[in-house]
Length: 590
Image 1: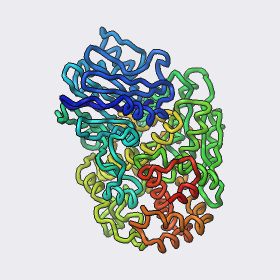
Image 2 (image 1 turned 90 degrees about the vertical axis):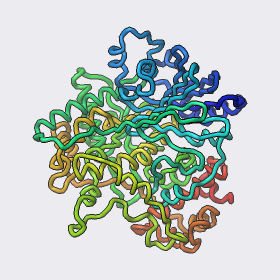
Image 3 (image 1 turned 90 degrees about the horizontal axis):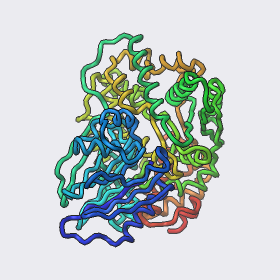
């Protein structure tokens, strides 16, 4: 896992001072603590900060082949297979990412069609003055672009483009309204005017300030629903899961996993344990679980400990307290430059900080609910209205609360566009595809990337693999949902692989007690948040203060949390306030 950035200059443009490149590199240093490389070529500058995972001593980037130079962030899991297929080509490193460059030599901008993995790739052809950018189909790794007066800049994080002085900080109001109502933003637009995302699966080719071509690769296979029985589907799923977890375990550094009491991470744990049994042993799996200091909160630590004991894993529970939130939230929000107001950023960041003491790679269960139809909202979205059917995310976070000065008008445009454009073999799958297109890359995977990379830890998601998607995406609805339970086939697999997981038990859900924590400090915190210029321009201060006093109420808790997140985000990423104080210090410096 790494950080990458660069600038492709227009013809005749004067290259930027080296200090600009050093600021880009400095802003991405946390993503690559093992080395920084800045390379200046004909009409391009390229920057790479490295977290060494594969070929530790020989895998530095950029990697060159003739006139082409590549920098990449991510892991190419089918690198061994690509090397065998390419055959006579001489590789200059043992880095898995070099296969992307070798495929580009052969296939040009179509190179990414053969890649299996998570990646953001930039390849510069000095002979043609062309830059090719590509991102993995699920959007596990992010890449951002800014059009400049003298060229095009790109980076792994938008904050790097701002820190380098290439783009001024600011707030796009449509994206801001999406953030408030959805807790994430959708599509190509980011919250920063002038900075856009490369979409998941997208490949761009750019030269002389012009877009030469654009293509996009779907993470999901095409075709109608299959006619397949459960036994055959289980056998195919088993092969895909084991193949994926084996590939995701490839590493030259220690790795572990995040473990909850849920089906998804238990699936990853069961596969990892089986790999060790089949190999006749090996080091115990290292696993970390979050627990909370609040009453009545679904605590997964006990269930996770039971699973860890069942497979002989080395397990640790990381206690997350209200004090942790007040002390570390500015630093956590500081890492969320592309904002995600998902309260799971708190335990994820703290788990990553603890895991970094022992490992450099963490496997996680993200994507299971989206790929296997785990959420009840998919069932509701496919029912007719007279049977309780309703559109997903039809109501925004602040609808009906009377807190905002005016109801955002366009907050749902991005989701509506996704609903109109996605395809799938069944009604359930089309509802899933909306989440896979927007919520997964722009909330869950973004959260995982930023929280782990803040500590120089690589996050891997074996359930989000083309091998797994090909095995399950075209299943009939009867193998997605049965007896009111989603993830039917995955639960059946886990029932056999790790019965201690009790995969058919009622789902607890994952909740961070932010409402209780905020309510405990509401009388002090509410006035601080209400006084922020970023909040007063969108909300009634009296209503904000009242919201924080009543933050344990069902709808008040997430709304208060979202305002707190946004207030901190604006202070840090737009106003430039340092993130080294606690929540109260950060908000007090108005």
